[in-house]
Image 1 (cartoon, rainbow, N blue to C red):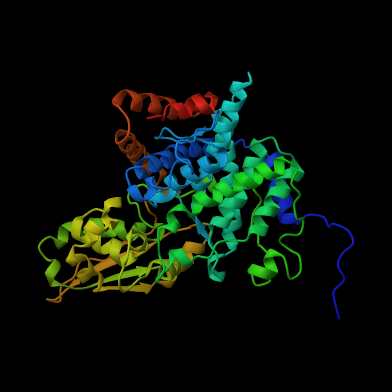
Image 2: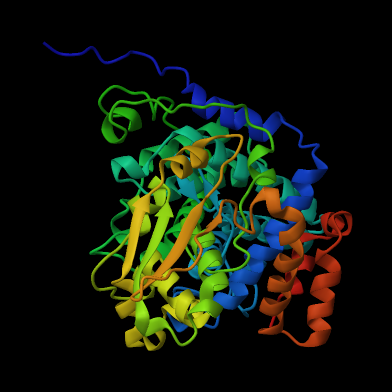
Length: 480
């Protein structure tokens, strides 16, 4: 008995249609969305500039063939590279994500919506320079901000109730989908071209999460999003050139994404597309660390003064946390590299309790050689708190709670500290934004002269002024 092969091409999957219609037809009116997009932009670029100082990142950047310069190509901030939009998207995306310090979205699936900025900036800059070279007007930065809002929304809404990690797939699939959609739109693509690009991204499937988990944790997790956003740009370019799509890439029996990779389940979408995600995005303001650990590290830094001179007398440290943290960053045993350490809750908390801070340098081999870290890590107990897990998924709260308490050999203990919402949460925006701006200033100061820093800050801190700037003019501020 065999199944009959359909005679005609079917209508495209509704999920793909809805994304295309959102990108093409929904006008973003929210001032809060545009203002937050501006903060997302500068925060992501700052993280990228900081990553340039790390050889493991820098070695992956630049042209594939040394010395290649693409006329009217996209600029890579903080470098002299001028590349085709696909490779530029990889460069920018890898820089932004390298130190695990860019913004975050937590739901059934996790991810980092600013990963899409690699594709968005590369596409918009390349288009702008190409247009200027032919006597046309460049694209304005407001279009970049709008593309960001829409990419954040696509990635974030798909993540709300669809857990790719539970079937072993990596969340960067959502980056590829969102980048493909908005970059096709930036290139002038129509509805069918956006649907085609999205379908191609679906047919690609998704990377495995192998590189994010022991015993295989490695640096690919720092460039996987750059790879995904670059792939989105490539598929957008193919669609603009007329490459066909695959209308039921999700729903085709046996061969579609749902049957082949998602255990037959269809995507669940709990809200319409708008600007919800960017308005509620989580900023990593204080610590370059996996986001589920942020509040635990806040607790550790606050407890640090009470532990001075008492590290040797610690009997145990108890962390109460939420289920997602247990699933991805509760690690025991050897940690082999920085990518392993920045996804280990015990390592991050131990370092913060010992040093009173946590910076990107904390994950390097030289810092990890301190024997006190592993000694204290072995004393840390991590347990799930059911209320924290429930509040993590509650759409009215979206907390990322952790509690921390230290017990000493003499029977004494510290008070238990509980932090429900990290500094980068929307509920702490007023407190967090000044710290975010200071973070950006520090990242600028590592790369640029005071005069250049002033130019970048002046052009970035007013949303209307920034929106009116040409994309290429804005990115020229970031040339070395």
